[in-house]
Amino acid sequence: MTDTPARLLNLLSLLQTPREWPGSELAERLDVSPRTIRRDIDRLRDLGYPVEASRGSIGGYRLVAGSAMPPLLLDDEEAVAIAVGLRAGAGHAIEGVDEASVRALAKLEQVLPSRLRHRVSSLQRATVPLTRGDGSTIDPRTLTVIASAATGREQLRFGYRAGDGTASKRRVEPYRLVSTGSRWYLVAYDMDREDWRTFRVDRVNEPFATGARFTPRELPTENGDAAEFIARSMTRMQPELRIDVSFGAPADFVRARLPAMLGAVEPTGADSCRLRTVSSDSLEWVALRLALVDCEFEAHGPPRLVEYLSGLGARLTRASSAGPGGSGNE
Image 1 (cartoon, rainbow, N blue to C red):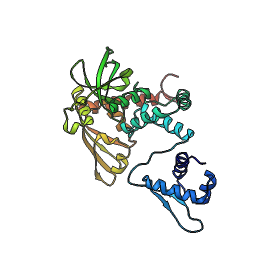
Image 2: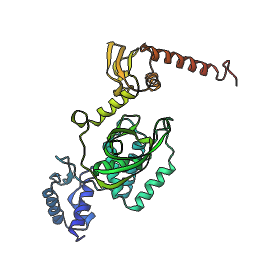
Image 3: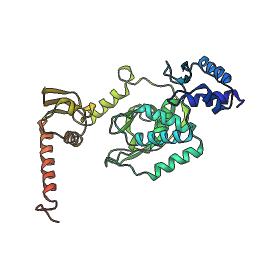
Image 4: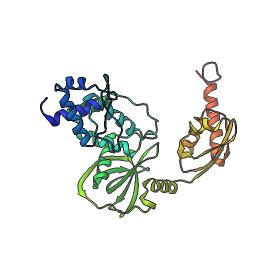
């Protein structure tokens, strides 16, 4: 291989595999001499890639962690696997998959060759995800279009369906995407209403970047925190729940099964703990998350949470007694 730039890219691709490469094997793979490999390693180091060499008869080269993230070189199978994984996570707002992963997906899909884009789309269409059933599944392309527009500071147009079913057309300056763990939200400046707005992304349809650039406005929160803006908006939309719940299990057990966004669990004994927090999430969602902890618990408040859990428990009891051998209809 006489093309030096192409050879360096191939060498870098090999070194990104988590193993140590003997110089002789690299030379054989790239069809050059060991001396050329040594020169190419020096070139990569000059470019800032931290290539470590070990001495001895079985010594070799490997790429180690440095102060900056080097460009990753992916083969076709790796690129498809990463794109499918990012799409699956982003499309269902999995807890912990946030705006950074959407930006990564947008960058990856921008440079994917058309043949690989087709493979990713085919895999996506052929896969049936297990969803939460709340109707908030999102087309990953919607997320990538919004993320690209926000990053590129381009005005965005889209159709929007409000909670009461009212449809409208929106023209906005996108600021940030925010994942709450159960849904995605867009924080944007609505140009027609001349004010900041939050939009549920699962209610956005046919978004497209207009190409018109804008200078970002200052978000009216401390340090321009979009997550704080979303939290304030959600608080205004529904009353807060002042939750007080005791669990008959160790605090570590409960913490591992409750979303961090619900608040801190404090131990009250070796096998007990208590959650006192304020939440703006729906009553139904909070009740379900408490039940999914899978241990004995007692809700002390608020009264409407206690009442809802009592009704839920009664319904579940009736459902279980109506099964085979129960008193219900078959």
